[in-house]
Length: 180
Image (cartoon, rainbow, N blue to C red; front, side, top):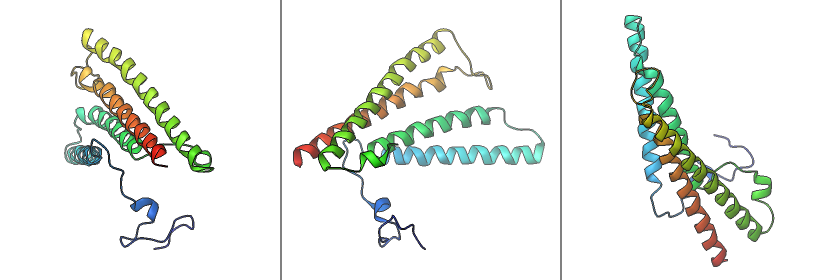
């Protein structure tokens, strides 16, 4: 197996060091996001496979699969975003974030974590209004007619989780500054 030249030599598992490094210690274990990702991906695969089988053998399809699959993909995106923030793998311009003196790198990492926390805190608070409106007005989902808030409640919950992961990263990067 050949690796691009910007990766270091592979470890015993054949992974480059950038991919095999250990997660930082966090108060809430990162296994939570990892297992949620596995469960959601498994559910998506099973739902899609069941729908393909039913469509193949009966020329019909389950009405609920598309609606539920879209919901699960949104949940998957938010859970993966939480894991990326906690692991400091969220999107950034690495030319600026990973160059220069270590003090500047830490300051930019803290600034980035704070901005992510503010953004997802705002999304969490504003989406609570959406959930309340869905509940108050009795909105139902277009596909199967279940209460819409069953789906929309997860946006503020997972946005607040991302915000908390970003605050945790902000605190850990502050500790790194104290240790340096």
